[in-house]
Image (cartoon, rainbow, N blue to C red; front, side, top):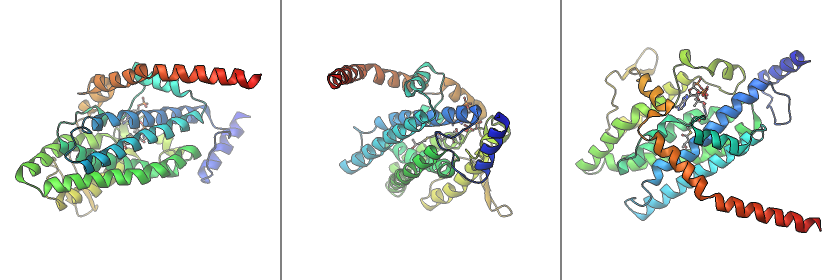
Amino acid sequence: NLEALDKNFQDKVDREIKIEPKDYMPDAYRKTLIRQISQHAHSEIVGQLPEANWVTRAPNLRRKAVLLAKIQDEAGHGLYLYSAVETLGADREDTIDDLHSGKAKYSSIFNYPTLTWADMGMVGWLVDGAAIMNQVPLCRCSYGPYARAMVRVCKEESFHQRQGFEIVTQLARGTQVQKEMAQESLNRWWWPSLMMFGPNDAESTHTAQSMAWKIKRNTNDELRQMFVDATVPQAELIGLKIPDKDLKFNEETGHYDFGEIDWDEFWQVVKGYGPCNDERVAARKKAKEDGMWVREAANVYAEKRARRNKK
Ligand code: 3HC
């Protein structure tokens, strides 16, 4: 009966046995995984747009090639994650339609504009840096396909983070104008990067249940703290100032204390009223419309092939 199935399921999770697509799982577990993995995939796909803005403006061929490689990686991460969603019985197109209708979320961070070349460094260093903090624990997620997808994704994220930090380091150690450009960019991207980790644990809808099901292995605030502790020394190393007057190393705890996040801004952006939300969703809708002829042609070809094989 259902009670016994749920108990057996939780025992497997508690004993670190991976849940596979064909295994029994509570509907709520399946539902929250479809929610999280599809929105993770949307984040990867939408996350390409802020960087696309700089492919034709990169300062040299090497930077252009590295940025192109990173953007292509993100497309691959999206493909991986949409495939992981399909193992749960979800329809990929339905999740994408939910993104286009505004029903589904994607990471708030991608609703900010990329105004200078230094932003390409910040996106790599801070956004992919935060993504790594959040994705490494997901390699130990109780759902097999998601955990396995994250192993490959994390290897590529490390390259993304390193190339971003290299860009920022070069600017911070460059001319006065370059250093100022890097600092101005850090001032715009620091707080939105902290928001990537989601609401404080006390306000988080899903954290408690996701921890019990070992979908999450750390809470939002734990990961945010790990990100701040790892990133502040990197900024200090290259002489950039974190834009937080309350930031202070706490000798007792061994962590950095930091200021309060502007949660009004966070929820405004999540609800669709950020600087670039309309532009990002419109770009995704246009991509689907412009690509319809490819789908139609592929479907006609597949039908013809199926008819030929029947003969
Ligand atoms: N942006 C948009 N929505 C957010 C958010 C953010 N930064 N943080 C939280 N939310 C939403 C949640 O989706 C949830 O809404 P929902 O119920 O409609 O889905 C609500 O706010 C409450 O938040 P919770 O903390 O309760 O939700 P979760 O337990 O799902 O935690 C999360 C949020 C930490 C983002 C978690 O979903 C997660 O770990 N997702 C997988 C990783 C991911 O999606 N990262 C996003 C960036 S990917 C990236 O940057 C890759 C880079 O290489 C491009």
